[in-house]
Length: 470
Image (cartoon, rainbow, N blue to C red; front, side, top):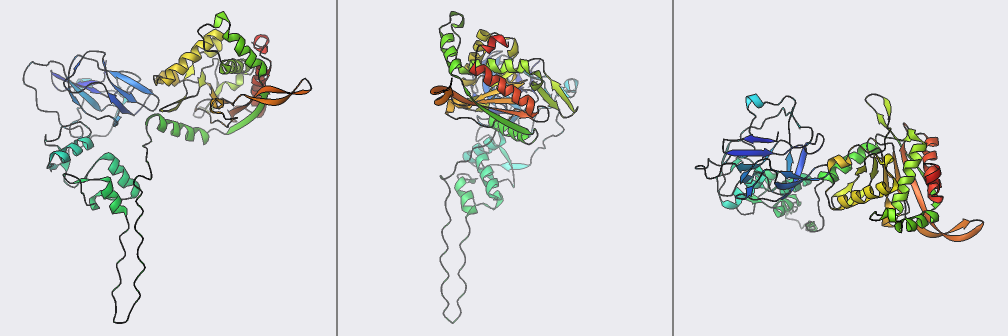
């Protein structure tokens, strides 16, 4: 079943689906179709960004695009109609344009009324809403420019000049201008518009925010010194950039705040000679069994952490606050933090503990490539148990990483540098790095955390332990 409604036997509407696990909204990044384009069942019509990833949405029926309800850049609630399709083009005169979204969000037919959650294209379904939108009373907006602006405000893509309705007391302004006014504490009803068709511009808001010049006091017959001139207000336009927090960035912020102030973090550090590990990496690159596999220090570090978890399985756990239980995991979904243009994401390698070194290397390569292309799916980021973050690629020695929610440990790997090191009683140049392990002190005490970190360091110093300890 799909997330769609039928406005008539001829027109169908496709709603924003829940493309993750209980997500409530998504941002439309790009439309791949426009009104008048022919679409077929399964064709991708747009790309949206959720709090977890960018996802392409396919249309579930054939037809001709009648209307796009939201422009690119709009944040749309799950369950809102985003596109209307004429599934029987040429069958007769088209009905009147659909009502604006806020006035006529289609209610499900009685026999299709959802019980708790509606079936959707992907994920677990749309939560049942207890709110309904009221139709607004309004008058015709004069002028095509004002109609276009109001159409953007309404968010349904109505064309200017089609009689868009607005509330009589609602000032005309684009969403970014409304946000600016809100940030500056300006009531738009008090702002004098200068834009075409009575539209309030950013300059109008800044002008309203500027302090009014002080009035000169009335002079008496005696001479009174003139007041000091009032300094002109500083025009901050062009001096600041405000970036809306949404999508992946919004999710990162919420998750990190939740983790930092929920789980009591402890971080331990160790500096280790990884010269032998670097030699092993060079040898593996020449190994025929590793042909086509991306071999780098991260691969050996990942394997070392998996062996350390095998030797100290209690660290691979989660804290269940509701049940007041420690949930020990008998599998390892190894998360790898990846920096992408949309922000930091942490996809994970499912059942990494069961993979051989070549399999682990192949999985790491696929994970990194997918992340860089922006195609990581929400499922790929769900269910992680422990994470590695490689800050060394940025030339950083180490850090104090914050746990991913629901995980008990995260290992930060610093830059590998040639440093003077005491080796066999003599100071020699050696490849050295610093590791940092953060863990949830509710379920991982200092002894357990120290054992895990020490084991990882010991393996990287003597990689042959991968064989003897595995």
